[in-house]
Image (cartoon, rainbow, N blue to C red; front, side, top):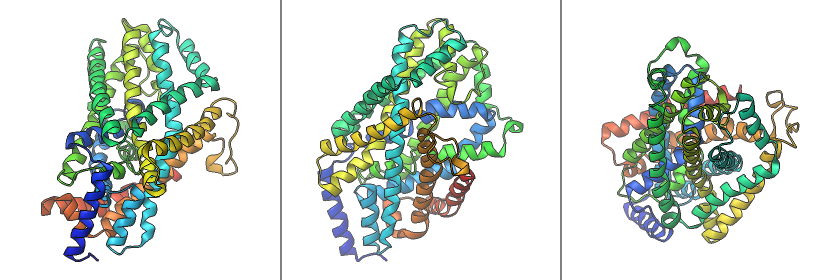
Length: 470
């Protein structure tokens, strides 16, 4: 049930006044860079290439692109819309919308699920980001040049077995994230992404240019873009569906938080589509940068999670100018991880500012410190606590370390749950008039989005949710 037009005007005016104090993105480009920075992360540079390699290449890529359209873009539009409509942190945006439209106040918990997911992810994401920071020095020093597969594997194993070294690089990475977030929307987030994202694109294009010189670029392009459906399994389809959802930073409350800083005149649909297209392009370019190097050295594209930190370093170590381009690659990886880390910390900082009345610097320091401390448990689970599996009494979680549990709990439960609830809220609960006002789409375009987010998207996310659990 909506309020009267005068009530609506008062509500909108209050939000605009509050947003002016909180700060807004200076332009549509600023939002696109920030949202793309959030979406483009380790999932694009690290995970997408290896899961593509494991699932047969081109057919997997084609299914992934369809899933981006059916699942990714509709939920991103919904999250940004909720954030801008509420004009607050994810929890308070949902609370305000529920109050205004006389909905059940429990819907604010959708925002809480997302904030919790992002916070937990950052605690171990920072550890992995620290690996990338470490490898810049390792690669630049020439330590990988001419090394055997066993020696390259030993370098990575030595890193994981040294808790103090991991703690150092985890601390450096978290400090980089906190410095940016503490400076606010325009001075921190916007300024950082305006430098980091163009830098990331330039580095990625340089790496693709380098890959063209390996003699295996055509083979890599065929692997990525020529579908062979005989290599695609049901499991591969569901993995593509899940990755399409997670790569856009959905279910983490990030897009709600960023949407709360979005000016009213900016089109949510156009920006969401733009971010999705750029994110997908980066993932494909990462594949074109990585697979030629892998193929040229006779290595396996389906090398799994070790592709970036073991297979690629081995390849760079055997190639002319490998130390230089290997260093550039890990700088690229840091940029991608950094922009995503910033976005993961922002929702909890925004909430602390509103709920506890703390200034941004204190909110960032408090949230960042707790996240950093939680990350220590992930570090120790890679070495001193590697035999600690707290939930082994549950058959499905037997043998999983703290690091594994955090990854499993966020990726398989919190993120799909958050995305499913967002789709249900937008498709079945939120005022249609409010959504039409925020999205400002033509009737056919709005109806297409509405039908998708109401029926197709929830079913797709639910399938991923159930599949991951079993």
